[in-house]
Amino acid sequence: MIMKKTLIKNIHLFKDSQNTALTDLVIDDKKIAVTNRQDDHYDDVVDGQYGYLIPGLIDAHTHTSQDGLATSLKFGVTTELEMMGRANSRQHTDADQLMADVRSAGMGVTAKGGHPSELQKGAGIPASVLKEMAAMTELERNAFIEAHKKAQGKNGSIETPEDARHFVDAQIKNGANYVKIMLDDGRYENAAPLPVLPREVLQAAVDEGHRQNKLVIAHALSQDFALEAVELGVDGLAHLFLEHDEKTPAILDAIAQNHVFVTPCLSLNASLTGNLPTNLLKDQRVMSKLAPEWQENLARTFGTATNMDFQASLLNVKELHNRGVAILAGTDVSQPAPNLGGLAHGASLHHELQLLTQAGLTNAEALLAATKTPADYFATDRGTIASGKRADLVLLKNDPLEDIQATLDIQQIWIAGKAVMSI
Image (cartoon, rainbow, N blue to C red; front, side, top):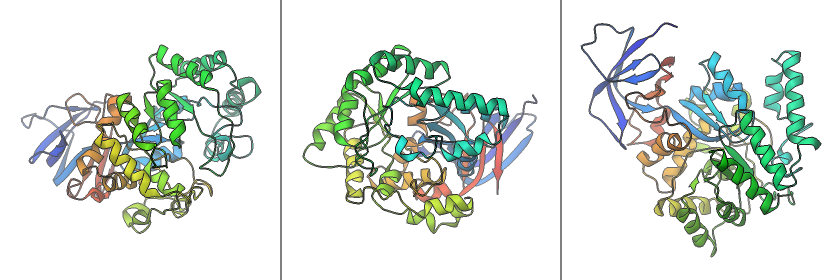
């Protein structure tokens, strides 16, 4: 492979929660290098024209496919953290740098017939995966179907602590980077009552994940399940609950005291409560990059919890932030479907940044929630602009510390040192 060195000049760098004075940056092959303007040769020289260079964005909660990863990259989202899906999907990014990188939990620990079965059709294989399967060979397709049956069907059902331990071990052996458990009775998806695994079974899953030095993340949309997840010893919550009442302060305290990180997925909560992403829908920086099916998806909502007040979600984030809880930016985007509206890969992370600032985070804190903070937990080779870090970078025309919507003013994107977009 040919090594390549790129100089990016006349730029401000987002470092240590602020912008630097005008400076330069060198990409040496796939990594950020120490700047040396006296270097005798650069393969490429990019004039940043006084723009603002930020780390590649990280969506800390997705369910993805090759199409989703390609769409994300158009928006400067260079890494997706898949919270349930095929652990080996990361292999696709090795051959095609026109897609975001991905980490995955593999299949989640859930009861038979439990969440997210209510969101899936047919045999339970999501439409985005069926579309991807069309490009597989017959051998690959048959192998995947058998693996899916084993994970979701009769032979893969989880009923006992021993089942849970075996299931978690199997996901990790298949390449899962972390473990996901489900605590959701369907009350906010118009699907109640869904079965939820007994506490002792979930505890076994958490313990097995930790035994193998993996983070364990919980799906919980309600206060009671969020508290149970914290008591089980999870490392993070993949959602923030929709309620805010007299019980909330004690639960927020428990999250903080146990050092549990939270990915609130405000863009999802907005959709659940029937709120359209109006800013995105009228922004040509967004709509011009989305395929028609994603434009349509963005223009509808989940709408299954319209009795809940979205302001409660914003307040919960503010109070968690005030308690010092680590906040990660994530969206829970998956596929374009009538029952999964209000979200689109890549685009929705910019919506999430806007909502985080509405919840009280500064623009710099919101950017950290989509760069350094998730990288600290999940992918420490990226997320900051520093020598030796993976060169996932986004060049913006305008200053996102002045206007968070400037994250959409994308001039150029690099992933692992490769320029994939220039306008």
